[in-house]
Image (cartoon, rainbow, N blue to C red; front, top):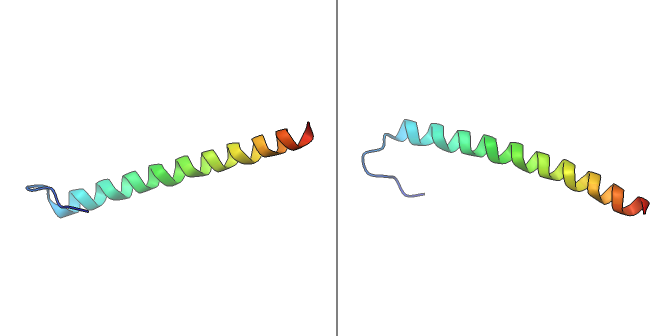
Length: 44
């Protein structure tokens, strides 16, 4: 990842961590929804 000029590294690392946390949470939600939909499809 390119460093943005003038952006302190610690702020950038904190932002990356927050983005990764949100991404992981969203992936978990999508996986749970997919699992539910697969079960729903298989019961029909």
